[in-house]
Image 1 (cartoon, protein in one colour):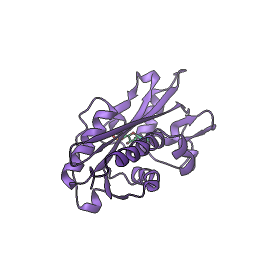
Image 2 (cartoon, rainbow, N blue to C red):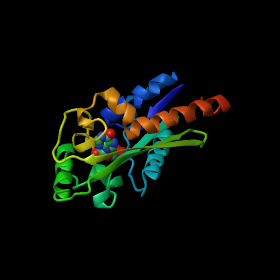
Image 3 (cartoon, rainbow, N blue to C red):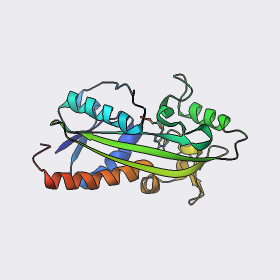
Image 4 (cartoon, rainbow, N blue to C red):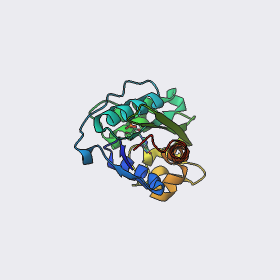
Length: 202
Ligand code: IMP
């Protein structure tokens, strides 16, 4: 059985494929199928945006599609950048530019609590859908640390590990991360779904 992972972010693809690997399903990227569509993230929640992406790629590929939408929610910024995490600071910034801007916005803030949130949506060609969500709580570091991961990883600090996401190994990150948690919940739901309705997907 083949699923399309509705992302072209290679780091996300690796993280998602690692967890889905246990399911005995084949996963491909939109690029592998020659699909190059940019889905506009017009939703106001992670769940809405994940479903928009899953449905668009499912329709284009005529295969079940799994999408994630995720972001960093900072208490002192009223939950921002949230669904705007990838666009924080505007088009001109790269990952480093965005996390430096975040550190700047947090100057003088004593409340540094934050969480990563992830929504997974899966859309099937017959119109059925599955969803799952995960969250990881931490704080915003005072300076970037670590080279691993992507996005805001170097500035997201996990008190229980005394490390940022950027300092964790890929396996450690998968165990605690919002995406790891959401994907594990999703895998369980998908297993149950496929047992109940094996004819739905193929
Ligand atoms: P989207 O889900 O592709 O819309 O992008 C979410 C944005 O949130 C990414 O571009 C990253 O900046 C950030 N983000 C999501 N998950 C992670 C993560 O695991 N580590 C670091 N940053 C993340």
